[in-house]
Image (cartoon, rainbow, N blue to C red; front, side):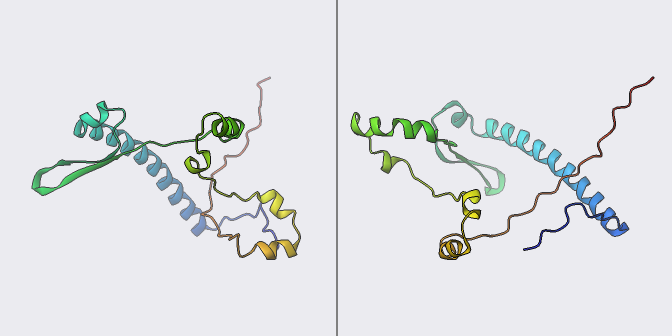
Length: 153
């Protein structure tokens, strides 16, 4: 598969207008996302003070609004697992404490793209029914030109 030129110049008026519009909307979206988050926090605190006060509250909660509307919140926790620490403690947790580690923690296979790319086409063909590649949404970033550090003399 041929790689596209990473440094092609695109400077048509139509493209530059589109790029300007995208950059403006991107800035507006970031501002709006921040405002939405701040307002959501305030609404949540005012509408659900008991949920806010109960640090262990989990579930769906509703409050009534005028004209038969409801405001609903879902209180939950984002949970992370220190995988290396779990791996270190796994034997002790099972042997000494009888904790069913394999039932409590799920293991999700993850592809090492570096190792996969080292494999032969034969191996990749064998894995093709297991591994699916789907193009991700591209990221776009405006990178300002590097300015030379000019010191006054």
